[in-house]
Length: 195
Image 1 (cartoon, rainbow, N blue to C red):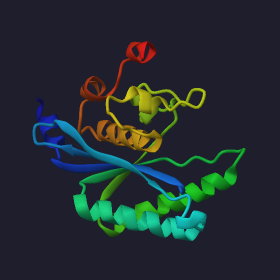
Image 2: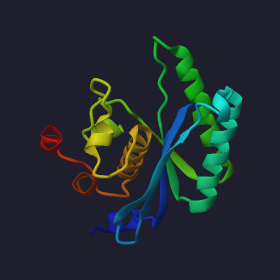
Image 3: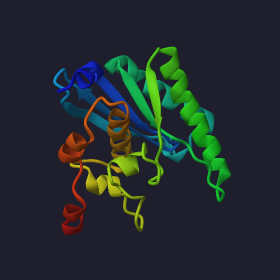
Image 4: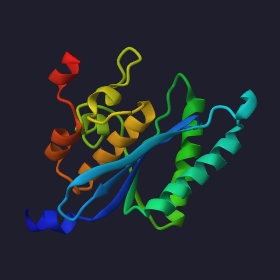
């Protein structure tokens, strides 16, 4: 290991978020002093409906996301967090506006708790994006490629994306080696085709 690599090791917890108003995915990883990563937990906050079929308002959902993110932050005290970049779709500009509110809610919590964060791009054409770094293409015919390609069981769409966002953030920060991540956590393209 080079001096530069040793300097970059920051033992502790890291969290990735795939933020959305209805389903916010999250993933927690622990990086040890030997630069080995363990994905310790992941899940999805589902905020579509209350009990008895009533729908949460946008404000109620934002408050619930805030509570859940605070709970994660206070439980794990992460060194750094990673969120997915928000993009505005021409076909649905309101979706982007809502995602910006969710992103702002999460970033505000992180800033108030003095936790560093990186916004990770999702475009497959950008070298710092998780789709590019992990060689995971966009969804194909309704199937989430990150669920199929990551070597973790019990993943769901948004938690899989949160794991991928966290892994890419760690690569982008120079905290883990890309080849190590690909070997440990990503199925090669040929394995995907066989499954």
